[in-house]
Amino acid sequence: MDALKAFDGNYWKTLFDSRIGKTTWPYGSGVWSKKEWVLPEIDSDDIVSAFEGNSNMFWAERFGKQLVGMNDLWVKHCGISHTGSFKDLGMTVLVSQVNRLRKMGRPVVGVGCASTGDTSAALSAYCASAGIPSIVFLPANKISMAQLVQPIANGAFVLSLDTDFDGCMQLVREVTAELPIYLANSLNSLRLEGQKTAAIEILQQFDWEVPDWVIVPGGNLGNIYAFYKGFHMCKELGLVDRIPRLVCAQAANANPLYLHFKSGWSNFSPVKAQTTFASAIQIGDPVSIDRAVYALKNSNGIVEEATEEELMDAMAQADATGMFICPHTGVALTALVKLRNSGVIQPTDRTVVVSTAHGLKFTQSKIDYHSKAIPEMACRLANPPVNVKADFGSVMDVLKTYLLSKESKQ
Image 1 (cartoon, one colour):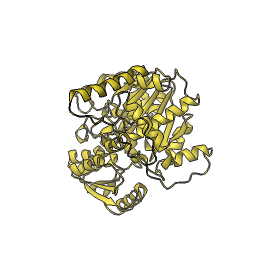
Image 2: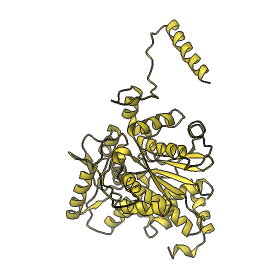
Image 3: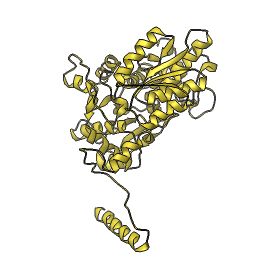
Image 4: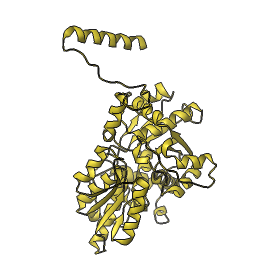
């Protein structure tokens, strides 16, 4: 930080802004455009990048105005990335460093991770790009087919284990302690160095004006700390004069941080995570708990939770206003709705909801919802296709009924 402070905030803003959208290697990446803040001493030839980052900041105008009475609501689509999730931001840094270590002759035979889906996709893609073996520990039958197919297609060695994520995490830590396999989970701080650039990017996209709130889904809890670190660095280095208030949103079925927050930050207790549609955050014993608590305490932060019905309804509402989000973003939007309803977030507050993965990875859950095939869930916003005979009269009857119903609502 002392070396970075040799330059003032305007220097960094000008430098970062000058690199956006360029093809100059490696600065066309949203992560590596901040190389001096991420991994300054790596040679550019060792960097493994798919020009990740620079993701869309979507003005959620209709969702904001109609559902929560806000006109300054934004969704940061971190899932619009190379492998369809924000995990690319951290993995480009980690795999680049492994690439460097291997070129230096260090004994690293491969990279391993435990995953609920997205980490394995990012790891396998970046390792494949660099020609580095990747080994993935997955909980059997607990991730979507779209998530499973990515590491398989990218040539990873996939171990499907009869346990949950926390069990996979324990095993991969034991294995990497014995074998020359590099651990790629967010326990590794290199991942967070990449992920913090999403926070810097948010400030860039608002012309270095600080939003009031940033809401992030939380599972293993590295990401909430990464966002805090990115915002805090910008404040400490003079790019901005404050940081946003952070909200960590958890699924009620996997909510150890929420329970810790509600207890007034008294003794933390892991939980046995129950099944949730937000599968990437189905984690009961998060490895980054201490870092997450630090981030929330230092940003006047809040933790909120979402039930399965709440998160699926929120996802359907968002999709119906032009988005196509993952269930984890549904968790974050539920937190937004609850904090608006309680008056904590004001109608004029500029608020950013972080979307962590692409909706196409979770098509089965969307199909089940719109088919009303989820047990004990009303699926009140379901929009199933209508079966109609293939003749003009039948089609006209159905269309007239539909159009009249839309007219009456308006």
